Image (tube, rainbow, N blue to C red):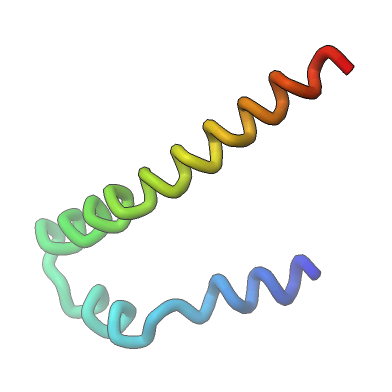
Length: 60
C-alpha cells in the first residue's frame, strides 16, 4: 500500500512540474507559498477533527 501511495504522490500535475522547472527563485518561492496557503485549511480541519476525536476517546 505504501508503494501505491508514493507512486500517486510522485505523479503530480505535469503542467505544474513543467512550470516550476522554468521559474526563477522568487517565483518558485511564491508558488511554494501558494501551495502551503491552499493546503493549510484542509490540514487544519483534519487536525482539529483528529484532536477532537482523540480527546473524546482518551477517557475510554
